[in-house]
Amino acid sequence: MSVTAPLLISNLLHGYRSRRFSPLEVIEQVLSTIAAAPDRRAWITLLPAEELRRRARALASLAPESLPLYGVPFAIKDNIDLADVPTTAGCRAYAYTPSTTAPVVARLIAAGALPIGKTNLDQFATGLVGTRSPWGACRNSFDPQFISGGSSSGSSVAVATGQVSFALGTDTAGSGRVPAAFNNLIGLKPTRGSISTRGVVPACRSLDCVSLLALTASDAAAVAAVAQAFDSQDPYSRAAQPLRARRDPTRTGFRFGVPKHSQLQFCGDHDYERLFETAILHLEELGGVPVEIDLEPFLAAARLLYEGPWIAERYCAVGSFIDENPQAVLAVTRAIISAGREVPATDAFAGQHRLRELQRASESAWDAIDVLITPTAPTIYRIAAVEADPMTLNSNLGIYTNFVNLFDLAAVAAPAGFRSDGLPFGISLIGRAWTDHELLRLAAGFHQLSSPTLGALAAATPPPTASSSELPSEHRVSVAVCGAHMQGLPLNHQITARGGYLLRLAHTAPTYKLYALRGSSPPRPGLVRVDSDGGAIELELWSMPLASFGDFVAAIPAPLGIGKVELADGQRVCGFICEAQGVLGAEDVTSLGSWRRYLSRAAP
Image (cartoon, rainbow, N blue to C red; front, side):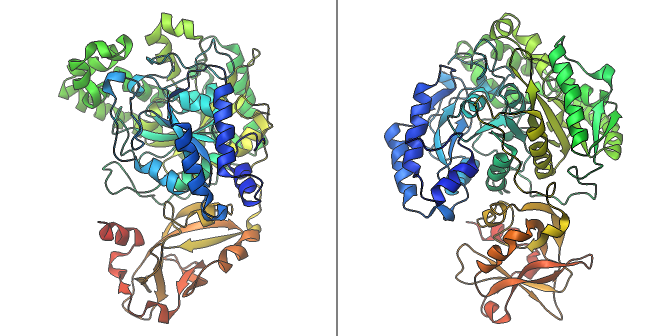
């Protein structure tokens, strides 16, 4: 039977929960789709069919309602570890077989997602073109004569052609966003450090991000809700930070920055130029107000990434391997990375100082805007053109993407229409760190206006799922959570699956105690208001649709419940509280001030 097309996460979950099909039937469809697809060179390693069927049968023993990504097939860029499957990073001689799975992949599998295999990439994630691979140039999902974009090339094509629901990529300088734009996808470049990069072959370790490629912003948000979590064993991981007070960039009157016309570059691509102008009009339709900004500090920072000392960080990652095995590496990759060997330490410090100057110069733009929009790439090239001039054309593609990680920004690449020859165009919605979810909500509304189809499929773009951009505030409720329902923790999916999204971090008034409840699985805290000796406890404030709030509350087990929690600013909101008898014999962890700190301390 035909399971469902496209493989949207919402479609799959609805089908599973209504018992219309099983994970095994979805795997059979995935295998059939991959076998029937034109040779786009998307995959390096597919898991054996029997292994995929075994995983699907094991999942079928669980209730579909029990896991947020139950039976959702996904692809993994082949610089991210999956236990017992080779990681090549696009280089056969470099390949190794890890014994453990990267934490981000492990989280997705634990949430019910089914890994299908490892995808093609620009070697050592060095490139934005998708042509720098011994497995061959990955071909665009719309026209195989054109590049797919890189370095997350295979991941983008696997999603765009309907072979998987979503894919993991990486993004240091645009490697997740450029292929998203070239294949009509949503590409989330999350806040740096919000998704663990442990188990990822580094490119520039201080800048690397695991990126998400999906057909819709809603799907990307569902995956991000599972993938984003603090990893105490990753030195570059960061816990979510409070959001600065600002206007919501999905409300009427949000301000979006548009570069000065003289600073926009399209490399002679008049279709891309026209489509960018149309994108501005679509954002105005969504209630946005365009504000012209000076993009020069951003562009100058972008040039630093490859013209400055950060190339030395790439050499730090894999330079010794290249020195020992020069013929095992593609000539263009070897030339780029080996140049980092000659960068003196003084240049590294000078580059850092210059970056700080440029970042300070860019801050005036953020005083005037809520979100910045740019083209994701200035144009798209044929594979033959890139092979003839691999350095210059690759460099052109990073004009609007290279600066994002250097400036510690979040970004979402969003579909924005098609050229006259049918090739897709995309814009990037760029915001401050920790605005990932807001950017995805804006991308959802924009996608509905700008692109009628999903990926390279003959499937209509669905309307965005319920969010604050569609529901008046009186139809939503704010909920304070302090434990297992926090972002990245085991029960967070119970909020996100009901259309919830994170508003900000907060603290209680200093009148509460926090206890580690005995015998709860997963581990949960109890929050109790006290008359004395209390503390200010860290919370996350989430927004939920009122229509699903009752169902959420009904599922909360005793001794926990929902009551009114006083925040540090005096505001009272709905939030988790615990009956007094429920904490008898429980460990008092108030002094830690945070459930996350307790979990970190309790971890083996």
